[in-house]
Image 1 (spheres, rainbow, N blue to C red):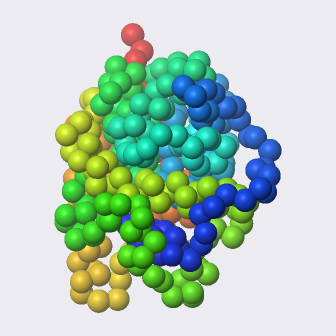
Image 2: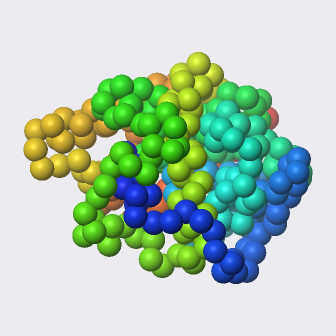
Image 3: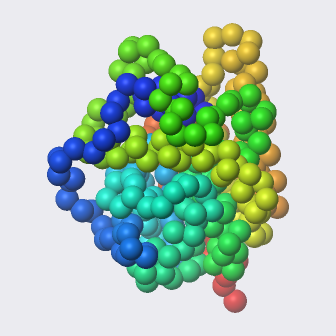
Length: 297
């Protein structure tokens, strides 16, 4: 959630208009899902197929290393939610139920067959749980990477504005913190699109959390919950208590399936995919092996 707060602050300083800059070359394919196109990039072969959904502010390019390594295990796809990366902007509100519905259309149009192992980072955890609830018969495994919990806003006393118009003014951060936010290596147009899209997703976070509370159950499949080991909240008793609450929420996610494990990335903060990608790849390998064993006659 510290990443969410940083994103909110960054929206106060960065424009969200899209310039005429050209996007980098398309790394995958785009498919029409009803008047607008979504991008998906797949590598490797084999079943089940690993499907990756990123956190707020990230696009498919941020998971390229994991995509390449996971593709050595089984066919792996990372896609861009509407508005991110090489995907078109889609209808609003940008909540998890809509996002899960769009992912189903994309996989159908791209002819990517089930079964799927779902990997969701941060907000992507909401979306993957919704997708698993909608398509339980198509899911053979789930990996949640420092994923959002449906009760986190109440438990952590985080107030998200109901209207995207208010996001620009609720938090301001010092320029030193902005300089620390690791986006300077990304193409400027990809950055601009990410900020604009994150703004709309943030404005629907409460709605997404309520949707997950009502519909976010998953089938009985292998589940690995990966949590950060480096504190994102620190410095005083209130911050330390928040961090403990976050870990308790992470532990609670393991009860989504009786076939679960809880793993800590001891040298990572929230961005485990950047700081310790090997832990995610190892989890993908383990869940893939279990899914194959469970599906064998």
